[in-house]
Structures are given as C-alpha cells and as structure tokens.
Amino acid sequence: QVQLVESGGGLVQAGGSLRLSCAASGRTFSSYAMGWFRQAPGKEREFVAAIRWSGGSRNYKHSVKGRFTISRDNAKNTVYLQMNSLKPEDTAVYYCAASLIGERLPYVESDFGSWGQGTQVTVSS
Image (cartoon, rainbow, N blue to C red; front, side):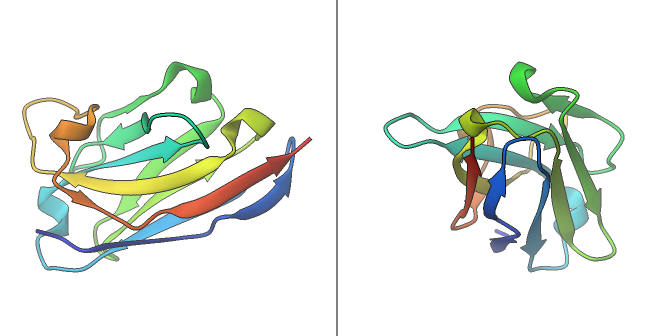
C-alpha cells in the first residue's frame, strides 16, 4: 500500500481558488490511479475526480467539471487538485485516495485501497 498525506486546504471566499496536494510515499506511486473525494458535514463521502497512472485520462464529478483540475507529477509522487471558482457547496473535507485499478478510471470508494487523513476546505459566501 501507499501512504498519502494531503495539504493545501483552508478558508477561501466564494469565487476564489485553492490547490490541494497529496504526497505519496513508496516507490510504486506511478502504478496507482489517484482520486479525490470529499465529505461535507452530514453527508456521505462523494467522488470528485480521478486520474490514470499515466495522467492521460481523467474524470470528474459533474458539478466540478470546468472548475476543478486533477493532475499528477510522478517524479514528485504527488497528485494535485486545482480548484477554481469555488462555491460554498464545495465546503468539505477532501480526501486523496490511491487505486490499483488499471483497466478503467476508478470512481467509487471500493475502487480505492489507500486513503489520506483529509484536509478541510471551507468556502465562505
């Protein structure tokens, strides 16, 4: 398994931007598809975005398409989530996750075997 540590969360006004980072330990980071999930208070954790090991394919939750961008740097063992035009409804704890699924883009929690501890993102109106 790979160990994951998120950073970059914080408080931002609506319309602002944040970039989340997820640093992975282990020499096999490039073998994993990576994803971001989020959990708002009182709600279930939900898929936000995922990226294949090569970075060539990505998918997004419909409501963040065009505002969020997932990317990765395999040389730095890091995956990013650039979040622009943030809305109050984006407020949540954001989690990074790693998946060994290779034949398709993972998108449900059970696709992912390793999780970070989460980072809080709060968007004020």
